Length: 88
Image (tube, rainbow, N blue to C red; front, side):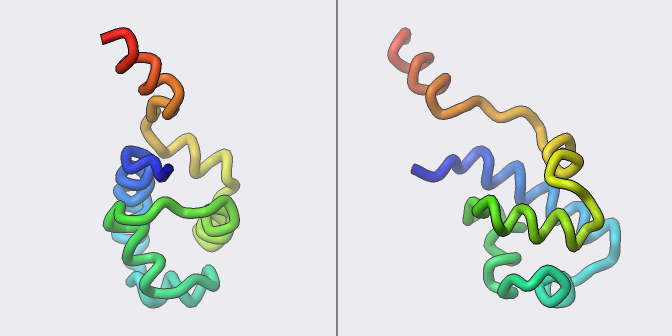
């Protein structure tokens, strides 16, 4: 199951970084070795990236995965969400 909250948060951060660095999705896709469609979906929060994609994106931005992760807002784990709904 995809975590849409994570996809949305990741997309906002990625889109913000690209804008801040004045990079187009197309140019960034070439620099990190991913498709333009994939980058567009990630930026729009429509697709959750794989670990490999996150690694490529972070490297292309000159960041470690840990540094990129610190830019993301906290997102509840799916298990925690399930527990909360069970208690309601």
